[in-house]
Amino acid sequence: MLEAIIVGVVATILVWLSIRERMRLKRYRKDWDVIGESKASPLSESLANLVGTAGGIYLSMVMLTTFLEIEVPARINISSVSLEPMAATSFILAIASPYINRLLVGLKRFRYR
Image (cartoon, rainbow, N blue to C red; front, side, top):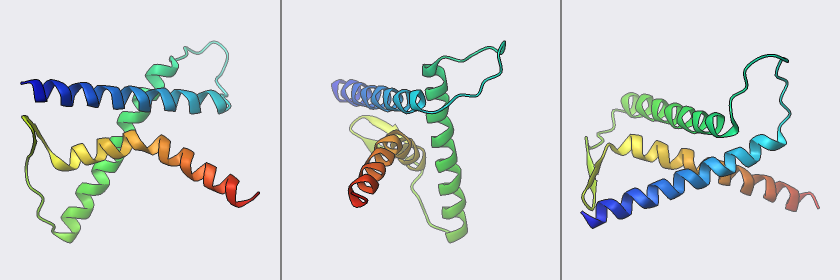
């Protein structure tokens, strides 16, 4: 039981850090909203972006495994938590994507100095 709580807390912290990074990135992008339209909060936009990214990665992984006829286990167990492996992988990649983007931008700046 304690292991499941720890896994849940770690997952929550990682999601929160990813959403915070997405909100930081959103602040630097120009927004061309029409005056008078309702505006979503940065938190809701970042959360929708996270779920959309994870969904896109998941669909790509499902198509790839179907095309290559790769056998993937139905469930994996991490301590006392049971997860669907492709969904968990896509969610982890979606959480890491803003940090990977930041790393790539930093490498570009370093290379062109």
